Length: 254
Image (cartoon, rainbow, N blue to C red):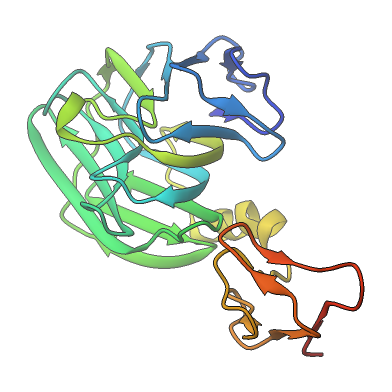
């Protein structure tokens, strides 16, 4: 079990695996830390974890927020170069579709299913045991592949967060990573995933006023039905909604 928690990290400083205690994720090219996690700019930011031996049945848990779906951008890519025992989690092309892929040497098996959310946090768990690959999104099982294969047990030379072992063929991750957990020798069950997601499974509403239309209501993009109605003339811009301090306000449905 390994756990790199980037929430509240120090910008420029490595983050040490809090379970094993010795594997450091070193930030490269200037990602910045906040209470939410580590923000990668989608240009050249990434993290490089110390190498170690692992393989067999494996599970990962990540909490991520994509700002842009760059081309084949990786949440993580652990391998030894191009088509060389890679294990990675990525978005497909420039879409939000999830790809969970496992190589044995240069032979790969992958599961494409469901979607990452845009500009909103997504809790993702992926696993492989024997020939079964699974993906869970926000506590829900969304995909299975039954003809997969486990990663080989070996020491890979690259353990990268936010970038690809394929170099410039793929683009960098643009967004924020809250944390990454990994279990080798363990397949997380649906019950395990429910427990892992529980801290995030609270009532969630989101009214995004950036780029809104002046005079139009803004709908909660999570629940999908609660509208914030502007009153007395607040104005919209790319930055958000401007209230004049005189009589402007918004009224949300009950």
